Image (cartoon, rainbow, N blue to C red; front, side):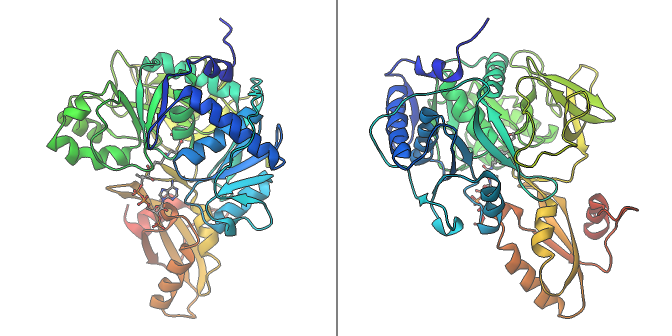
Length: 462
Ligand code: MCA
């Protein structure tokens, strides 16, 4: 069946239905008005159809207004991590070349018009959403160290959100607790856009706290760090968790132990799924039927998943067309499958089990961190000969960044560590190394490439 386009479906949601709660509830009708008035203001600033607008805001009404305004106008949103600092923002701004920036800290955007929040203008509501239009340019931590732009079309999101809706039995009367940051795929696409598309509702929080979910929510989307931090709350009073229809985990492997610990406290088996910004969601465990701890389930509708040489590869309408403006020739196979860089295998029931990473990536609290990006920042510190970063296990954040440093002998180790920690301050918090060690040599392969698994093992005993 041919579905109407994403925005047509949202525009048809009854005016008075509750949509998002911030300080109070906003209906779908109010959000449409807000979008139209924000679009009018954006147009007054010279933003037009297809122009890019960078949005570096924390969860809240101004962030949502910025998105809605761009949607009403047909502008391309470029969400930026609200925690990013100057060095992390600069390459993204260079690549995206936004016409306008909405951000709290104008000093990060020299030479570009910056506003701390969108304003209000005369209503302007074209709501153009041709399926193949790029509606968002999401930057993901590239393994090369430079964030890569992954253009998102309406068609990608609609296909994937419909598949998720069917897999998870989501309906308009579902209410999500949305505490995920709205600048990653997880919170922005599944959380915000999923809620709008199906005319459902969400309680938006500025950040995650391990408190009981509000009584009227039906489901939560979270990362493994949340579920671990929730364990004590669940043990003290499991009732608010038992009431939920569904708890979903993604962005990083949950692990059977944590899944079992939550099950023991709440009787709820967390539903684990797997996805990436480049592909949106790839696989999921079922709503009804066996949720297998330690697996990420089976392919979603329309998603073609295969494993070649141990690597998970994906094709289908929700897979992006390629990085922009810096295409990566190795991103796809010659027959058109996106190479995830994740190592996987099918279990005996046909569920996907992720067994490691072929790419160099550390996932800290559900946030992808490129060790090469951290090395580039630390490598410039006076007194450093070379540096290699890797991931090491962490009880709270699953993994954290660790740095092995070869000093050049010109300063004491104490002074060098002080300089390194200062330099790491140029990075947002989750990227900063939590463990340091000094070594005389770094393990490299015959091509001179750092062997990060060996750094983790030899320098940090992992
Ligand atoms: C916090 N920090 C960050 C981020 N969040 N740095 C970079 N990126 C972030 N997203 C920094 C802060 O600036 C701060 O630095 C330090 O980390 C601690 O911040 P705080 O807020 O106190 O952290 P927390 O309360 O301990 O929160 C950690 C968290 C949270 C609960 C794990 O980050 C979280 O909710 N993560 C979910 C991430 C997520 O949505 N992932 C989806 C992406 P300073 O020390 O300077 O103050 S993956 C995805 O979208 C794919 C498609 C998928 O499959 O889902």
